[in-house]
Length: 355
Ligand code: AMP
Ligand code: MG
Image 1 (tube, rainbow, N blue to C red):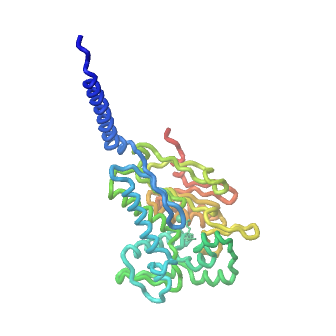
Image 2: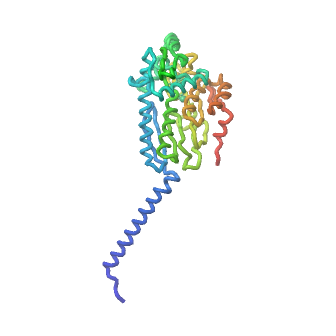
Image 3: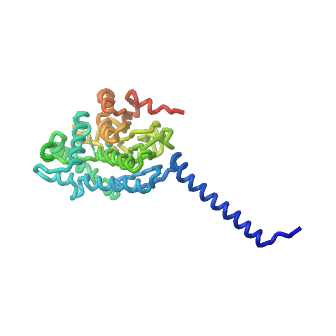
């Protein structure tokens, strides 16, 4: 019998090893291209904006990092445009002008919507509390928190700021595209994150209509599509008196948005009293008729603004909230100061697991 040539054996071995490697590369490429894009290999992105974190989890056939970067760039644009303390912003300009100010279409529609929500919530949501928010120190909260320099404003200072606040002062001229603030200061802090999440959704869907995942910022989540394109996302609603991660309930959502406003987000304590960032426009003081309010709505702008409003209305005006809010597509969970849970009728449906 002829002995095999060792060189031939080596050559054959190399061919076999090479074929196996090529085979695995092809299989991996097919998996990445077709399978993972569909079942959902999620990519995460995290950064800092609006004085808080934004987290984007996305699965898409388009490069997820391209989508996340575009969303973050849009959020930066909105922060620059609508932050009342950035001198180049349109809100700064409006707040510091005694006359009519010409605005672009986006500014007009965001302010118009904020005023509509103010009317719909009988002024509980009020986008013209800027002077009060500044007086209480919540406009520079992180700075003050770092230095621990919180002082209580006096009753007369509060009365003075309150008399120069309120959405009824804001006038819109739709024909000439102008807005006049009449001495009040606009502050869109209670609606801007919701608007940014609405833009995030639009941007993600423009890149890839079938992308899925979510965008989360400052206590609010906007869902881009069901988990793995088939199941609900499981979202914890934070216990307002628990540690981060401790939940008061869980909601199951495959679309829409959920926002929570709470007195634990930005606050300071003086003489055992908690002073936080959500003000009751009727008094000029932090609202103390709730400790958190969560709203589920398809529209993230509604979820954001109505959660702030539900918080302000609190337990005293719960009947108004539970009767009126669902008409605007807002389902509410309110946590009263005694930690009682109040729900609108459909809120419970979102708490039911489908498994
Ligand atoms: P949120 O965390 O969405 O409830 O919004 C709270 C932020 O909205 C605050 O930090 C203020 O900038 C602003 N704000 C405070 N009180 C009100 C209010 N009653 N209506 C509308 N915006 C408010
Ligand atoms: Mg809000």
